[in-house]
Length: 215
Image 1 (cartoon, rainbow, N blue to C red):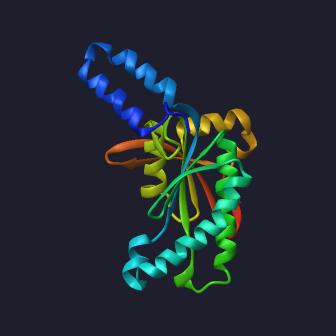
Image 2 (image 1 turned 135 degrees about the vertical axis):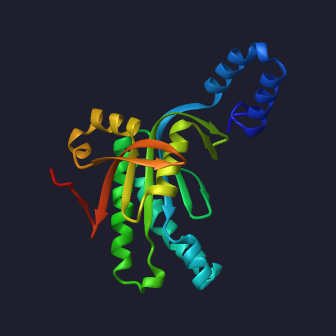
């Protein structure tokens, strides 16, 4: 890892920006140059974290998390994803293109549903996924910041139901440029989170297939 791409270096630049406000724009440009990336960001949230933990205990839920990792990690790698971090029941992943993120998301949800067929209900692994695209700050290879990161987190953690993949406007625009046929399977909707209206595009994976909205 470059010494210029660490949390320590970011803190140094932020402190310098606060101490020298006249240089704010110059220092912000340095931050974007050192830490900036442009990519798709994928946030997966495991459904029922609190409910499962309260009902069956933390060890049970940790077992469910292990099953998720065993299924999801190889799929993410095969679709060009880079796992940035896991926080509790959430996975944060970057992809070079939205098309890769959507195909990876579909493959994960299909694999989870296939695994659930042979498991008792208490062992089911179900997830929702949010996907954004745009300029981000990647700090030390293990943390992400940016507007599209925030929106993808809202979609994945707060709004996506099990089996759903929700895309931001920017993510859909990028997907349409590279794979209009795949993009045509999404349903347009507008969701609200924290009082903010979010134009959103929905893919639904049910019974192992992507459901195509009726025209």
